[in-house]
Image 1 (cartoon, rainbow, N blue to C red):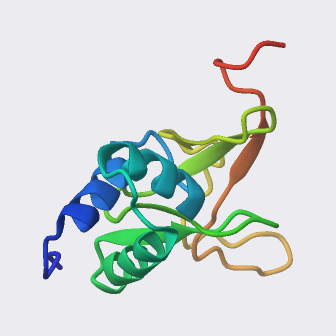
Image 2 (image 1 turned 30 degrees about the horizontal axis):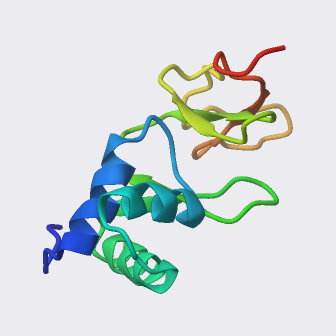
Length: 127
């Protein structure tokens, strides 16, 4: 579904989400979009993220114990890596699980999907 109303603020918010190498928190979106639009309010970011999500342009990524993060819809099946040092979250292109949907696991559990977040230190952070 296309974005209904294109405002400068919405364009900046969507631009930082689409240009990121992983899902962003509202705070990260606010900081990055605020570089393009000085004075951008956090309430404006929340409101536009809500609208973009309702329109199906972005999706929420849920990480245990954290606020939702946002990425463009349509990125397909992928997982995430969370750096414990800089706290950034990155997309992983390959699925390390290798268990296709429809697989029956021991105990009779039938796989309908999965989500995986790996934690560690990214290449930008020193040891």
